[in-house]
Each structure stands twice: as C-alpha cells, then as structure tokens.
Image 1 (spheres, helix red, strand yellow):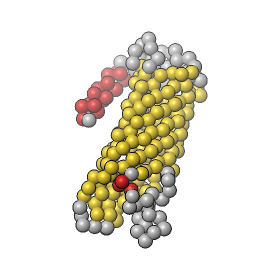
Image 2 (spheres, rainbow, N blue to C red):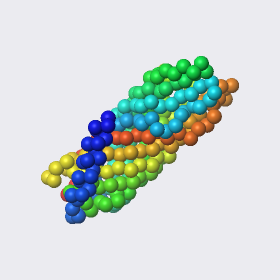
Image 3 (tube, helix red, strand yellow):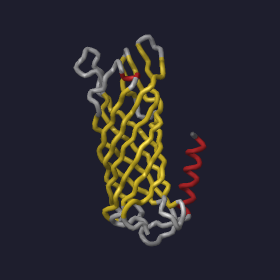
Image 4 (cartoon, rainbow, N blue to C red):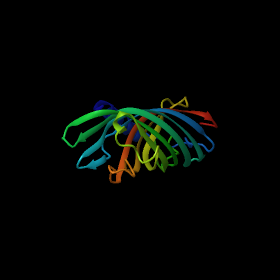
Length: 216
C-alpha cells in the first residue's frame, strides 16, 4: 500500500516536471470511459459514536467505472458508479471491538474543471464537484439500519490523468474523492443514533480511453 503511494507520487512528480505545452489534450466533444479500482480510506470519522455503540470504516476495496465528456477543453461532466466490500470496526457496550464485513455502493455526477488542459506530455490536473448517492448493506449494518436505502452525498475531488504513450489514446488516471454525508441509523426507533457528518474518502486509480470524438 505504501509502495503504491510512493510509486504514484514519483510518477506524478516526474510527469509534472517534464510537461510540455502543446495543442490541447482535452478536445470538445471527447467522450472517455474509465474502469477504476479504489480504496475507501478510514479517515472520515465514525458512522455511529454512541456510548453503547461505535462503528467506523476500516477499509473497502472498490471496483467502478466512469464516463466523462469534455464540453469545452477545460470543462466537462462525469458520471460514475462503484461497489465494494470491506470491514467496519464495531465496538459495543462491553467495549469489545470486532471487524465485520460490509458492502458499499457509490454513484456520482460531477462537473469537472481541468486546470491545465493544454499539457500534452505530462499530467492534466482537475478539480471536480457534484452530487452522488451512497448505499450500505451487509452484516455490519443488520442491527443499525441506514436512514434510507441510499443517502445523498456532496462530492469534492482532486485528480489527474496522463498519456501512457505519446502515440496512443490510453491514459493513466488517479483521483481522491470525498463523499460528504449525514450518517444516521435506526431512525424512528428507540435506538436512533445521532446524525453525524461523515466523509467517505476514496482513492482510485484507473485507465481512460476514448469512445467518441477526436483525442488528438
């Protein structure tokens, strides 16, 4: 895990320092599809933080896909879906801690702003924001039902992509997303939990390739 992060950082630093300005890499009307793999990182705070129960994300492995369209060279739209399995750390009233399996489902619709779309041989960085949905199921949630099947999330993201070769259209991509939600469980029951602001932080890597429009 640490070696993957170090390798990614070295790749990003090398690409940024060797970037050349040329014709726009992002062309209006370009549509790309991107299979991705990711991790839901355990830094977003607890889902439940009561005296009798505490639940917090450990980690989840996520598989997903994205499709984006560049409306103009610097601005586009992206749709994404993903699903994963992982563990939730549960501490009960006896102070016993267990890691229990759980499933997470993600969907997103974001506006994407490419910061430096004219970079050809380097990393094109982007910032993004939009709305999404998060669903949770599995053994970890059997005794604390989510407030609904899927809860709305505000999403903010930072990422980038770069050509894998100068002659081909395929690109390497990375992104860090924050799905911001209000986490509340057992709504309407005597065991209803407090609503907590929660961050589902997802780090993803993938490849992108065009399915429509000119890429060069």
